[in-house]
Length: 271
Image (cartoon, rainbow, N blue to C red; front, side, top):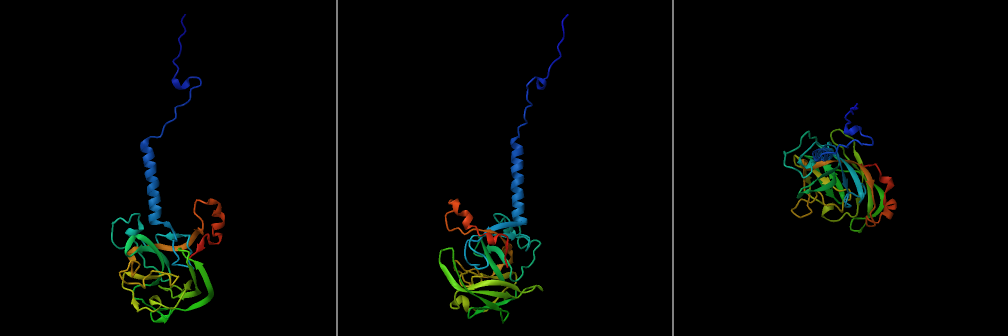
C-alpha cells in the first residue's frame, strides 16, 4: 500500500528562514523627502541657528556664539525660506519688531548675506549720534559706565574701550531695554552724525560695538553701507545663545575643544 505524502510549503521546511522584505527604492526616496521637508519647515517657520562671525555686537554677542533665532517673531517673508524664493512680497502674519530687539536680517546690498544687529529705531524715529552719545527723538539715551573692557576681534585686533549699560526706550508700551555697549572712541563720523528719520516700512539697526560696526549710520553706496533696513529683510529675533566656542585653534585639533567651549554662555539670554 502506497502512503501518500502531504505537500510541504517552502516556509515550513526545517531550518528555513523567512525571507526579509527589502525596502524599495521608492520608499527610501519618500522617507528622505519627508525628512528634507521637515527640516525645511522647522528652519523656515520655527527656528534656525546662526553663528556670530564678527565682533560688531560685542559685548552682547561674542565671536563664536551660536544663537537661536525665532523665525515667527516678526512673521514670514521670502527671506524666511532657504534660497529666498520669490514667492510673495512683504510679510505674512507680520508684526513690527520692538525697539531694542537683537535681530537677524538680510543685508541690504546683498540679500544672500545675514546680518545681526540691534534695532534702535522704528518708523518715524529720529536717530542721531552726537559726541559719541546716542540721541533718540531728541533725548539722550541714558547709559552707565561699567569700566574698562578689552577683547580681540575676528582679525585678532585688540578692541580696548569703555563698557556701558545703555537703557534704550521700549516700544509699543514695553519697558526700557537695558543692554551693554562698547565704546572705543568718541571721534569720527559714526560719533557725530546727521539726524536720521526712519522711513515707513524700515528700521534703523546698530551694533553694540558702536565704533566697529557697519550699520544704519552709513547711508552711502559703499560696499559696507547698510542704510535703513526694509522690514521685509527681517529673518527673526535672537533671544538666546545656544552655545559658544572660542576657536583659537583649528577645528580639527579636537583635543582643545573642552577648554575652548565657553560653558558659561550655554543657554545665555540675549538682552
